[in-house]
Image 1 (cartoon, rainbow, N blue to C red):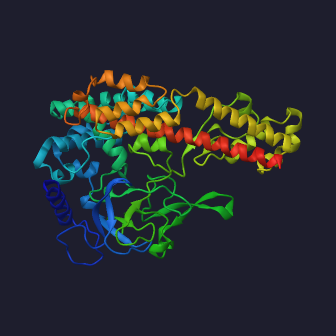
Image 2: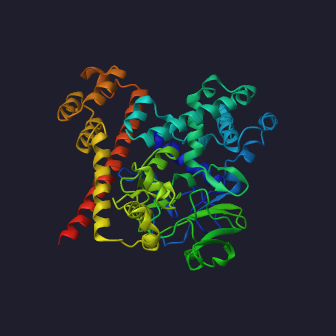
Image 3: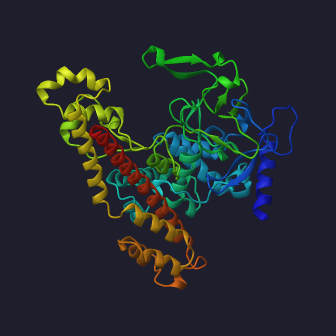
Length: 490
């Protein structure tokens, strides 16, 4: 009841700032109710925005005035903050926004943003917050390396901003690395692009939309940081060889033709959001942030998708594969459904061709054609062999991972241990239990678990979910290879 009242107060505060989902000129007492409502979607993102009526694709569904956006400029109307920030020009725009956010948090109820700040998550699960255990639970070298880099970057930026934060006399708890990562995670996961500030803006109510991955339907140009402004957008012109061209947004003469879910519009002096699809009453209304793999979603947003059409898996290849063609390493991957990328197939086909014959068949490989039955059979066997080797070298199998996920979901120590008895490898379980002094039923109960332990378990679960999806892509690739090999046997 208290949480509901706080949410109502927040939405009322937002309405006073002019934030509204209504297209009428009336000034509503509540920022949501005409098109959207704050709802819970437990199986698809948790708290998010739902449709209170049928919505048409391209329809304006939320407008947030510029004056309601939290940006460096709006926060630095505080003269003390502005003076100090101007003395630290070496800091990046994102670092400065993080300091501004912590500065406003330190003001408590005196901050004009207090109702909004109180509804920000208390913690996040981005990779920069992963500890050593959760990092290694990812199991894949690439993911471990990305996590290490994220943590090192956060620590470096925190140290660089220390002098400014001390000059501002922030409270001791706001000077900690934990507080800094929270601020950095807030910015990483919640800011939206604005044309005048590289750091972006925090958008009350507008940041409640959950993520929808881009599929066949266009949602945003480039990635989530390239949201439509009112000046021009970059569009890929397929009739022009895939070259990028500038299109004046005035050419988009109806909402149904908009190429993104929203953006800051100069003529409205507001951030405007549009329905990216047709929604029925009660549906969750989603926002496309851009194209991300699951590892990138974890790194920047702290979640992943069970079915991500943009996920990729990179596998170890012989150096000769990379040198056999002009494809970049980034293009040699396996799609989320287990199919090798166009470039990976082409590179493997050329690699399996004698060097003195590559020039004569190169045009066929680059066109995506099979070179010969023998060539195709060979590369399918090699690809399957690599995937088998990667899976074999992983510390756990998919079945054990799924048992572990079920164990983590349970709230009873005995049930937890019953699940672990079914696993072939228990090292990971015991390492976690020992690290958190969870040796018996009493120490495992939800009431006894510390907040820190629960957060670690949540991140552990994300790591397991990520590696399960990674392994499933490899399993699906093996199935794909077998189907191709079977087709040659008929």
